[in-house]
Length: 410
Image (cartoon, rainbow, N blue to C red; front, side):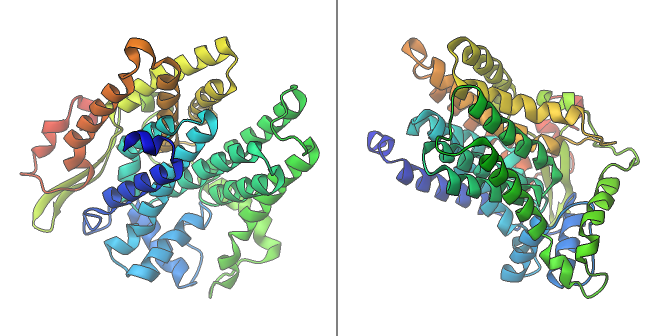
């Protein structure tokens, strides 16, 4: 059976997608009340659905529009708030699969990386929390996959698709902007470095497609704001409004008990309790904590991919490593007064790509089953932490101590 699936990537992807969606949907109604930053984004989505007035104006509209669509389809309840996030998370898993398959042409490698994304825990929690990060991850993983796809032929239409997805990602959060810039640098390097990945498409038209379409898509996402009953957006205010958003995003905020520095995120020093209180008559908790095997093991995989990629002149291995390095380095320069572990959401996804790439590069000989052993460890840890990832019923208020490995996790 599994040997047949290796020759059927689309069937494998479909099965992974079904499994992912089922996992994300199970118990989606828990907790039965707003948790953590849902208190900001669900009210903003309600306001957007009613086209009433501007709300939560420090971020663009795409993610809030997705949450609003869920409310419109399934009601103003926990399922309605979170259902679109589960679809976005499944799209993220499939984006990882597609990206790895395009890079390495191995269904096994793609399936392994997608499975790790499913198990990395932060994606699971964000899939079931009405926040922005899960939509950001979905559009960016799909955009990167589309960018890689455009290297395989028909570059103009496929690059256009990638640009649309990049524009939607920026329409979720401006944290996607460095990825658009990185794609532009990749285009220039490819065209000027003697290794043209987009034959038949010159550098200027390629950059025009990437930046022109992504920028146009981004501004198009503000269309609902032109129809607010109060304070509607106008074409004259569209550009000045971007500066207002920047000012709100860079304002100095009061200290927060869950704040943390960017360098601490890879080490899992300060996870975040999204929820920990009685709900439905029992104690429940939701802890945003990455899977230790994937988060710590992924760091070694990044180093290995970078070293091996340079040594073997493998652009795939080097690129996967640089994707993670860039994703964390950007937070060292972004002018934010506070940082939070959920900013590491994208980096946690890229670690799954790095692990799949590293095991592909070195999983030979006596190490040929190493990825399976690692996968079993990741599954075991996911099952172990599942009760405090999924808001399952706990024995009592002090139950959280069972999973607290370090003081900073409390």
